[in-house]
Length: 508
Image (cartoon, rainbow, N blue to C red; front, side, top):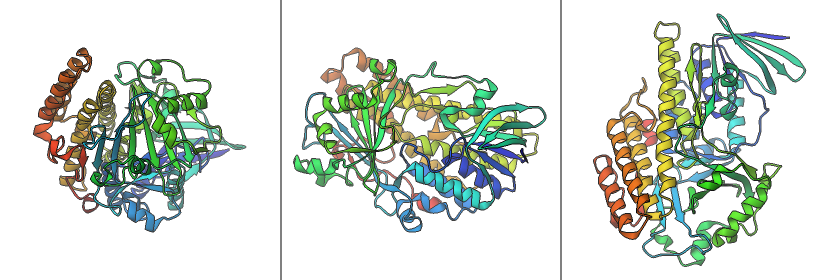
């Protein structure tokens, strides 16, 4: 029997759990991480964003994590950790498709939208091959002195005056006693399950499921555009050195290209198809989607799956939200508390925002009368943020029948993100209590509510030409009080070369 006594147990050693473990270790807490798997393990690729990078830089600066700090920018990561699999992400790219038709090239870019998040590769965001990044962070935590128990099968979690966590790692029985538990297990929600706290999609507006895998041999979308004579000289960056979105009929496809040539790609499906259980033949469903869109089929003509070993992964509905995200002596990180959809690449940034706020609570309120109420408040804020993300994503799905309407609604996310970046720019290292993406900001909430009503009217019109034009104009007016970087300026023709309100590296 391996008996352990500590301050904090973190269930899960992924990106958020490992970063938090290092922070708490720096604060003098004895931390134990437990994970049912062993690093490295397959996890779908994800993208950082300016918000994620800014928050990571802040955490590393305040809590002295110099080995982790380079991950806050693509150029620094390439130099400091060339062994890690990453990709250059200059921004967000969107291309609109029509079922059964090849992609149409238009000089006015009416079915394209490129939003730059950086001005160069040095300060850019990154695609992170999570297998590498998670293993790196877990190893860094371990090298600092954090105990990491892998292959840990938790059988029982109980609480009296302290928590007791019992299970088995390999052939060894483990019993751990601690004061506080963090659930960083993601969708598994190990602690939530032990506490009998339900995770349901009830009340969430977004309804989607996914098919995904990692590929080699995929033709560059930028290369295909060149062969079709597209006006690539107008693009603010090579369009697939970004989070690339192909906007389809009640669905979209992500493409994240790593420097190794591997691509993380997946379809996210909404509408009636999302209500059915996932298909037993995931590869067949994947091929069927590709066949519906000739240009995507051409792009994947020579592609081969490299991970996971079992091939294309098919999910059931992605959305869930825990009835509670915190309680006496425990809290979840965002992916355990709830999930909406990968559309806006918010997962990493949201996790880091909670790690940042939680770190400040451990630093300033641990062992004080305010501790319990502050933990509960952070849990409720997290749930409110997830519901706000749900509104931003659901509106995008509802406007997908027309690319110009989709592009207009997507501006709500960019407005909220830019406002949050600006808040980070004026906040000191002492803390920042604003909710993620300004979910508690009255102006931001009012803007979203106003545009949601416009979406309802647009849907009722059947997406005919004049109502679409009115919708776009009304979104432009709705975002005007918060539009600090010229979004929806007709002169840009959907090509945004600069949207950063602040220098994220200076803030870090």
